[in-house]
Image (cartoon, rainbow, N blue to C red):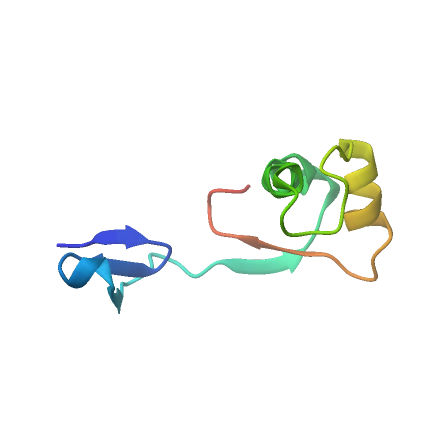
Length: 86
């Protein structure tokens, strides 16, 4: 039996390079962002911003600056909800 990783099962052997699709209990829902989503969105974005390797934002960006840039200065914001993010 393999390790479940986000819809895939990693099969032991061959260095773990073999991936097979695994059944997903329910597909994620894509819906418009709601202000109540912000704490969960920030929890994900903060880790990426602090690493300073992916986005052209200052790694010391504040939560308020990130919210303005990602939520309030965009045309549309969507979230994927899979049960882990309410």
